[in-house]
Image (cartoon, rainbow, N blue to C red):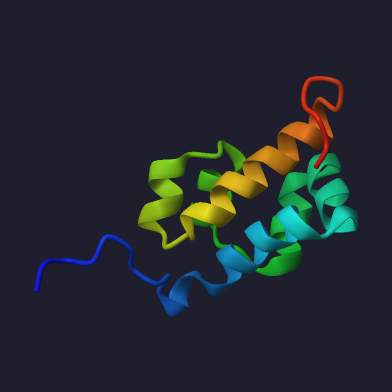
Length: 91
């Protein structure tokens, strides 16, 4: 069987995906992340590589670390909305 197009995130990426989900779904966490990204990422327990990739929203590095592509997309969108509310319509 050929490699599946989608692979489930590995267990080691649990905290990273929890952080991305929190940015996407929890307005309070997203606000804390915008105000102080390092503290917000430390709060969830991300390691240095995860923090570096998420700080720069490096999609390739995040994928390599096991981030779910949907969560990366949605977290990036929510951060853009939070940082530049007039540029994007809230949904």
